[in-house]
Amino acid sequence: MIKTQTLPADAVLHTPANTPSKNEPTNRPHQPIRSYVLRQGRLSPAQARAIDEGQSLVIPHASGLLDIDGVFGRHAPTAVEIGFGMGHATADIAALRTDENFIGIEVHTPGVGSLLKMLAERQLTNVRVIQHDAVEVMTSMIADGSLAGVHVFFPDPWPKKRHHKRRLIQPAFAKLLAQKLQPGGYIHCATDWQEYAEHMLDVLNQESLLVNTATGFATRPAYRTESNFERRGLKLGHGVWDVVFRRA
Ligand SMILES: C[S@@+](CC[C@H](N)C(=O)[O-])C[C@H]1O[C@@H](n2cnc3c(N)ncnc32)[C@H](O)[C@@H]1O
Image (tube, rainbow, N blue to C red):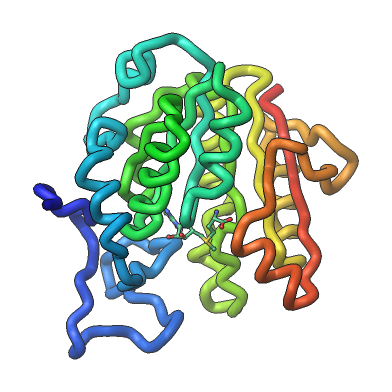
């Protein structure tokens, strides 16, 4: 049994009357611009069970700063992954880098179930999950200068020009992410959408706290394994671009 409703408190629950057409934003006047549309994807019984049984790895959204050492029970370099989707990269990276902590943030319930299922199956103890808007989590829960890394893999590209404002990587959010990094900490973004890749590079280049680790795009770091979205993009003939910047 799932005891608690795990949707973000401000989630828009779609009824037939208000369900937007596919990929249409749900914002109404005076609501913040969100980088996501809550999909009603099917929660499998195994994912539901993983959510029920994995609550010790779920951090509730809160308005105060998170005690990272407290929730992991140790002091270790900590990276945040924003929008982990089904969590394959998150679990792979956590398995590879067991001396580090990872906080995955995602709004999509089946994705949360999928990651919690993999964490249980692979007996990974170095990941915690927050199901909430990452913009709010990063703003209110993560202390400045506290992170060793930030991962943003295949964020929604919002290809239509009128939707570009919904992209996660924007100057203000890039500054916020940079402020959360320790000196030397990194931000790693990847996308299969060339125009968004160029936009990411521009935005991060313009952030004075950050320095590019490469000349232009980076070679894919070995820890980033291929995700479902990446595979789909590659099948469609898209390229893949990584950008890795460090806090000076
Ligand atoms: C295109 S998918 C990519 C998923 C995954 N990173 C991958 O590579 O397969 C983008 C994901 O980001 C999530 N997302 C978008 N904006 C978000 C936000 N503000 N907070 C949390 N999750 C967000 C979406 O729900 C979606 O699952």
